[in-house]
Image (cartoon, rainbow, N blue to C red; front, side, top):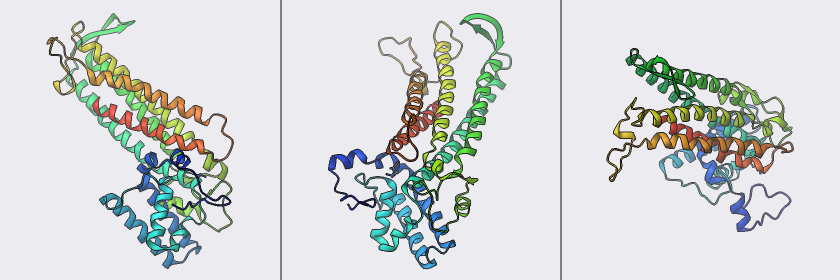
Length: 342
Ligand code: ARG
């Protein structure tokens, strides 16, 4: 496959290098955001008379078709491609000819990837907040039914004072409420458009970054183009917010494990989320809770990994940053799964 970034090189990279360089297995999950971003970009290019209306229509129709074909399974994302940005552009150019190349006018993959990640994560933030909201409502229901259920409150895991189960479980409600607030606050910093920063120093084309951001329903634009392509603070923040959610889930999981043990015998879990033992029939194991507790480690690990990845990176874009997606997506998936099972 010919390389779009060829430039001064022969672009004859080794198979080993191609495989090592490729991120498509991870970033293909952003295909929709990549295409949405490209549609807004074409609209902006045409709005600013950088490309003609006819060209814009051809490119947009091509992009719509690619999106449809990926979603219907007609177009398979090629795992040998370098990344999702190159894949979409290559398919587009193959299908509609050289005019497809105009899509990349006044942008670079550096601002494109930053945009795609922001668009993708803003969706994930909304989904996670929705799940947190459901969990809080469940907790409120449980509390409501247990206004008069007396249990022991503990300090140092020693019986301290009598409390109600409602009082106890609502403490977790408060944690998840703060988690939601943190994500709402983060959303503001994620929903800012880097597109138009290009490689790092903008472009001499008379583009309209604000117009493009509006099309993408983003609140504002990154004001410094160097920052736009180097900033991954929002990923660190998200990984950190997810780690805090994981702490809360893990504490809840730990207490679930304790409270279902024969020694405590405070609660009983439904068979749907427990496992048994054929040789020890008295057992009802809280495997799901144990897994939630166990998976917390990888969420913390991802945060530390991202922090380490960014430490000491010179401005602006460096390929190291390609690694950030695998880590944040893993935290997103892990916390989503843990929230759903909790
Ligand atoms: N796949 C790359 C990433 O995820 C996209 C940006 C590539 N930019 C570049 N200048 N090579 O970071």
